Image 1 (cartoon, rainbow, N blue to C red):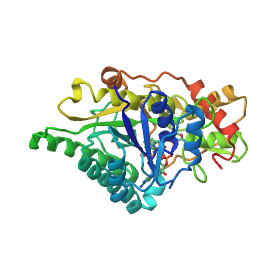
Image 2: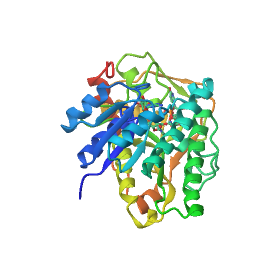
Image 3: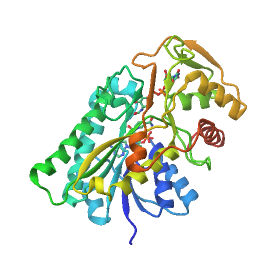
Image 4: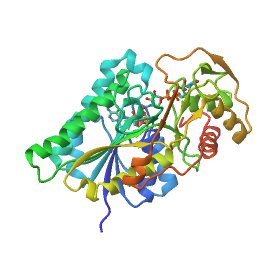
Length: 349
Ligand code: NAD
Ligand code: WQD
């Protein structure tokens, strides 16, 4: 069988670069489209160093229809993994139009280009942030949706669009139906075990792990733990942290599943990608100190607006239907995050 070619939008980013490594190592051809709005070409140089192979790179914005059409005309794309998007919750509240334009409109343009090229297999980066508040902290795919900020709503809108696109195939009795997987990520952390690629946030990080790493290396003075009065085992917020390499392996399983019975006549299905286990902020700090031998200077601060007390995945559906489960543990995630941070104190610069 000839090699499948995967178009990876946002392939130079944190998760996208790890996906490129796993795809190349699994024998796929990889084509990347990225506008480098939140990444650097160096990440793809590192992908080449790890794998000995290079993805084909197009520097373009997914909102540029002509650029996408040219890529589909030139490359023989079998399926698309769509990572490109803006992802900072706070920034999305300040710049909602920018977020909707980039994420929602960008996805519409991509879908139009895919339809015109008759490429109708898509894996989409969704997020656990699409879930509404629930009395149960372990989220399953059939829980009600109800994102609470523009970033989350952009993901929920895209999910709605993709479900509509798939439903239209049934009405139109399409002979080449869309096959779509929505992957709802919990909290991706860690880095490739080589320490050569990892998360390289612009400015002061919002997310816990890059903040912890930058305190440990001395770039930032002190971590604020946002609240220790939640109804959790130690009062701090509990999340389902998942190793980024496990996460991207879930995408490869999803590509395989598109060939199976579930998707034979077209479908749009959502799957959680999480470990099913939650850890508190204090557990993260303590384990990071144990694994790295580095102290993490922190203080308890007031709660951050919009945060849930506890949120972790029910990953049973991904196991049953994608045959995927996370394999790495918290020690692996934190050791790998630290290897990336300590080998690259200035990120890709
Ligand atoms: P990232 O910012 O590192 O990567 C996104 C990439 O997309 C960047 O390389 C950026 O330059 C590119 N990009 C953005 N807009 C573009 C556009 N219009 N055209 C072309 N390229 C564009 O983010 P990430 O952490 O790798 O996240 C990847 C995807 O996963 C995003 O869609 C994000 O919303 C989603 N996600 C991330 C997390 C997380 O915690 N990291 C959690 C859930 C979902
Ligand atoms: C984790 C825990 C904080 C920073 C966000 C997005 C979500 C998804 C993943 C994309 C919480 C605590 C954090 C700090 C802290 N992204 N914390 N001090 O909020 O679960 O999810 O990233 O889809 O949409 O909302 O992740 O890493 O910001 O926080 O105490 O400086 O760490 O309160 O309990 P979160 P996070």
